[in-house]
Amino acid sequence: MAAQKTKGPIGLADFDPKENQFLDLWFHDSVEMAHGYRMSIKIKDVLCHYRSRYQEITIFETEKLGRMLVLDEITMLTEFDEFAYHEMIVHVPLLVHPEPARILVIGGGDGGTVREIIRHPEVKEIHVCEIDEEVIKACRKYLPSLASSFDDPRVQIFYEDGAAFVKEHPDTYDIIIVDSTDPVGPGQILFQRKFYEDMKRALSKQGIAVTQCESIYLHRDIIRHVSSFAREIYPKVRYYNTLVPTYPSGIIGFFFCSLEYDPVEDFSEQRAARIEGLRYYTPELHRASFILPLFGEKLIYSK
Amino acid sequence: MAAQKTKGPIGLADFDPKENQFLDLWFHDSVEMAHGYRMSIKIKDVLCHYRSRYQEITIFETEKLGRMLVLDEITMLTEFDEFAYHEMIVHVPLLVHPEPARILVIGGGDGGTVREIIRHPEVKEIHVCEIDEEVIKACRKYLPSLASSFDDPRVQIFYEDGAAFVKEHPDTYDIIIVDSTDPVGPGQILFQRKFYEDMKRALSKQGIAVTQCESIYLHRDIIRHVSSFAREIYPKVRYYNTLVPTYPSGIIGFFFCSLEYDPVEDFSEQRAARIEGLRYYTPELHRASFILPLFGEKLIYSK
Image (cartoon, rainbow over all chains, first blue to last red; front, top):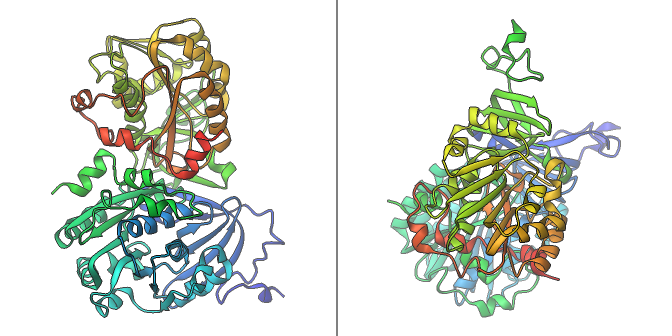
């Protein structure tokens, strides 16, 4: 019966991808609509699709880009290009800090960030604070190339609100990685001054926070806003880019907020050379990714 | 009457954007379809749309990205981000060559490349070899922010086939810029070994050729192919990227094929500092743009 074919609590009861293999199905990412352009990805199958307490969770099998995680109709990752995002959000801060022992990941429920962190032998403890347990469940089931990293014995998962969590852990983490959604829905609070102040208190003495912060082409107001208060709070703030074709505009950037170390002067090429399985990160690219187009430099570093 | 409203020889006779201002019109770029994803751009008006001897020429007024030139359903440029492409295809080679006096542009009928070339006082002569006179006509009319550059007295336009043109001009140009379409239709010949050999002969003794060559994420076969023969023909071959959101995957790259000068060691920061009106290019970005993600380095520089 049709009802038995459903793959999640909501919807798709009548959808059987095997019976409908000639359908021309395209997922339209909702982010760029405000910018008068949009990206669409061709879909072969819907692996899961349901609403958690916090958001709508969808995992597709795409036609050409592997599996894809979508939250509230916004593309979180595809297997095709997620390495460009996860390698850069992790290896840049972890190779700058000389002893990254205790790491906090806020968000990151897909496991890609943790997969890159566990490549570092210096890391002793990884706390993942993901508000939505259902994201982790879905990714464990359908995206094992990322989420199997949660099985590493150094990993401990907290299903809590990230903003509240950092307040309760002063002077604790060598590195905090904010692997968040966009500043809508549950991720909104993570783009505010108060959160950046609380993160600073949660860092150990020479700690580093790295935060996902959108595209210099599309999200100039958000980036200018975060830059203005981050530079008041942290001694060193820099912004760097990575190339992710399935994100709006093809790039995404991160704020590197540091209490002591410089992201370009202080990183260890020797430790970088020992990391195996890389597809994107190189020491040369580490440096180059902090060099922005002129309009980006002005956006982030002017008064 | 409806027929009087047409803006070109073909089609759109019944289309009046003022009467249809609430239509939800999206242009779908045809390139990415093969890759299972595609970009769509919201359209406010169709400024011109007709078929020349060589291709279908369309210029849209978009909702948010300014005007857009489309050839054979492939996005050539939008006013939103064309500066990222044109500044990088021009200023990189022109600042590497110490005396760029004679320049050949193959393609480039929109005028954006010439607009950047004429910022260089060292340039004495600019030959533009564009096969399709209709592209230049359309751009002069609807994209004056680019095509008014053709009025510079140093510019001479040849409506000829670029591949034949280089054969007829041995030992002539300090720099050749191939500002071409994709390797389909009239641009196909420009991605072949023979053309790279002929270009070499058309260069002066220490000349440089820079060629548009697609995205390391999407066009790996083309790039590997061009890289393999370009490195046999030219003493120095490097590949560099620029960030163009409205191109497939958000990036596009160029082969820098040089008879003598190194693109990173040999360029003039002093001359760079004298160029006014830049939005993308900086000397630091010049260097950084040659640093590719690991998979791109392997694609281009491995045997």
